[in-house]
Image (cartoon, rainbow, N blue to C red; front, side, top):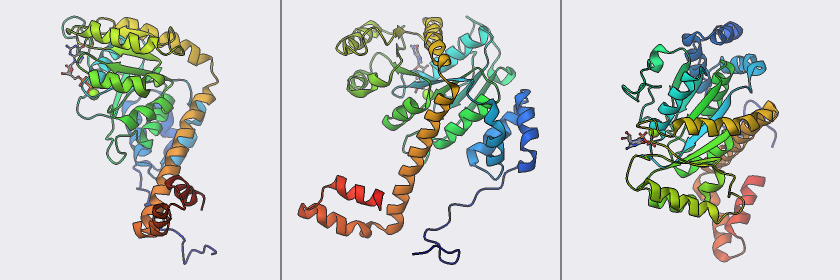
Length: 331
Ligand SMILES: Nc1nc2c(ncn2[C@@H]2O[C@H](COP(=O)(O)OP(=O)(O)O)[C@@H](O)[C@H]2O)c(=O)[nH]1
Ligand SMILES: [Mg+2]
């Protein structure tokens, strides 16, 4: 069948929302963003998040500035203290004079960008600090995974010149896998009382960790959790001695400097890589994600009944679900 504009093979993609930025102003906007103008950073992020009409021009203009920020993913079960720990890490990084971009895919525990340590260390909140920019993102519509918009926001924060980008996810299976693909360094967080999650770590999550953290080190049971994880690490020869296991208390700040030091240790190795290889990894993730979306869309458009011939073949044993799936993907 030949495609013509009169009889499109597939419905057109959803209309691109008009941006508030004129594509012709993209270069100006990026220049303003790079001087640290917060309103410009916020606008560029919004345009990229919505994939507005200005987004292609903005991304194009950003290209020469990308690949400098270190992207650090924080993952682990809800309640382990990811947001609190991110706050504590922001504070330490700011004390060291480094600028920090934050993407939080979790509306349930907001990141203020410091000031959580109360009187222990006085610091202005991110609202007053030009060295921190926090963006929250809904995970809605991505089944707990990381939305492709998060990757575009990484580019925006990277292009804005932040030294380090912290990425907190909701802590569900898919998002953890996604973070592994997207981040340069992966921190897997647990805490006492998350026994089931430690079981889950034994069966997969450990493999994606560059650093393992037992947070809530101030709580009873933290030492036991450390022992459990040490045990899990020791039965994996490939991980023994390679994955630092650290105890933190995001609440009182214990162990947070050691965590930042461990991040930097790995960060120095990452910095030796070609910056393009890190960006290529994120591009690969976006392509794979888009391909999976396209297949799902194609199946939906066909209507589930269109799968019936394949379903019958599976029922009669002439096909496996895998070979049926392959037929859809390769068609
Ligand atoms: N005792 C103690 N509580 C903590 C610590 N870190 C976080 N919490 C608490 O644990 C709860 C969940 O923290 P949150 O950062 O929202 O976890 P998230 O869901 O992983 O982002 C909150 O009530 C925090 O105050 C810690 O180091 N020690
Ligand atoms: Mg959180």
